[in-house]
Image (cartoon, rainbow, N blue to C red; front, top):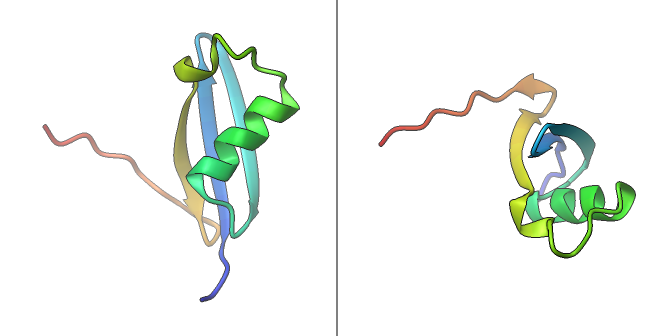
Length: 65
């Protein structure tokens, strides 16, 4: 399996976070944000993380309901 360079953005209220790494998954990105920015345990469920870049190309999120 080829590892790709992925970038993720996270939001918690009015705070904005960015992480990127080779072979980074959504779960790992969320855990990195929690550890790096010391998000308290009672606020971790409010953290929203989405894919922003895949292989250096921007990813657009669409919400089709």
